[in-house]
Each structure stands twice: as C-alpha cells, then as structure tokens.
Length: 328
Image (cartoon, rainbow, N blue to C red):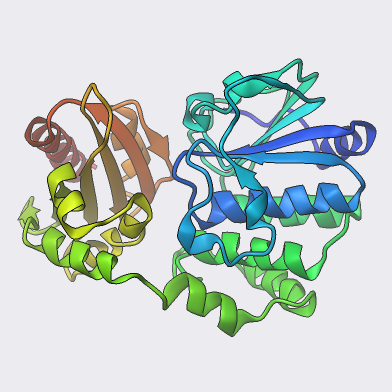
C-alpha cells in the first residue's frame, strides 16, 4: 500500500476530464455512501457527467441523504468513462461487479483510508490516519477550492460521523472536529442527520439483535465475545444486510471484552462467512488477524469473507484471535 499522488494531481484529473464513475465497496456503510455521493455532487457542480455505482445499490437507511438517488447498481453492459474513482475500498474485488462495467477509462483514482489498501489504480491517495474516507474527500474539496454545498456537507457529515462511531472512536481527531464545524457552517443539521443515522431503526433490527444474543459466546477468559447469524435466522426475523450494521458494538462495549466478532452466513453458493471484527486495544490488531483469512481494514476494525461452513470458520477465526491475544 502506498500513496503515489497529491491532491493537486487528483484535482487536475477532475478538472480536465468530463465523464466520471464514482464507486464504493460492497454493502456500503455511511462512509462509503456519503463520500461517493458527496464527490459525485461536487463533480456535478463542476459541470461534469457523473454516474455513481455500487454493487449492492443504496442502503435503505441512507436514502434520506440528498443525492442518494444517484446510486445505482452497475449495468450489465459496460459503459465508457474518462475516469473511474474508487472510494473507501481497500481492494478492487471489494467493488463487486462495478469494475467489469467500466470500459475505456483513461484513469483510475483510488482514494481510501484503509491501511490494508493494495494500491490499485493510476492515482492512489491513501491516508490510513484519516478516520473516514469522507474526511479525505473534504480535504480534497477544500484544497482544490471545489464546491461545498449543503447537500455535499450532509453527505460528508454522514461519512465522518458513522466511521468515527458518532465521534466516539479513538480515530477522531481535533482536525475531525474542525472539519465538522465547517460542515455545520455549510448547512448541516446535526440533530436531523444524527436521528436518521443513530436513532431510527426498523423493528427487524431489534428482532435480529435478540436472536443474535442467544448465540453469544465468550472465549479467551472473557476477552473475546462473538455471535453468529445464519441465513435461516435472518430470514425468520426478516432482517436485511443493513440491519446488521453496528450490532457488533453491543459486544465490543461489554466490560472485559477486548475483541468482538460477528459471524454471518452469506448468500453465496460456495458458502462464505462474513467476519466482522472490532478491537478495543491496538495491541490486538484485528487487521492483521483478518489478513490471515484474506481480509483487511483497520487496526481496530476489520473484516474478511471466509469460505467454509459457519462452525468451522468460527473455530478457525476464534483460535487466531486467541493466539493474537496470548502473544500480542
């Protein structure tokens, strides 16, 4: 992973080309959605032609964000673009079907904050110290003197607020709050956005949490907490992919727990298990643990998609975590 360009080089590319596609990772969270829509709206203000693609489309919970209607699933037939931009996505495969639908792009731009980013693309800008890709996009907009409307500010706020855990995580910096002050000045209604992001959930999410707590287990002398979701349980409670967002924090917030893990059966023929991992202590680097299973992310928050049945994957991953805790 390495940064090979400057904001000035990215700005030059944005100014000199006309047709753009902006993409973000599978099952987009607030950061992936917010930074993609914010940059797309900024490009539109510049008079550019812009498409916004995501393999899974827009998450229902985030449709309140202005411009979220721009997010579409990639088309079956490839389309021509001058520039393809990947945001908040550590590896190209995490873009799902999006790359296959991009044809003849002269330039690929990769902007991210994951330390595990593989450095794909022509112009690569990685800041692993940034708490959110949305913060990098803000810095790019300000450095380049690009438009910052109220709608763009709303999306950047959502991006930063979600990836900092509503400003509770240790990745939140003084600069983060300075940026948020500028976003409020640009028109963000903090109360309204926070209500949508953190205080409004469908009943299915609560039913899902109840089911997950029945699977909860503690290992490694209580320092590791985990729960697991089968496809059958998800169907029974009527839970969708976005209902799982943030539930792992229930485990992470438990006294004595240093690493929390969420195992989820995915709807893939080969039977992959989605593993989400959170750590309270940088000595227990969950990015390194997930890398053992082909995943990545951040020191305190990472994930992987692991082939195998649920019980076997649970056993392998929990052993890897136990080894990391016992030999930090």
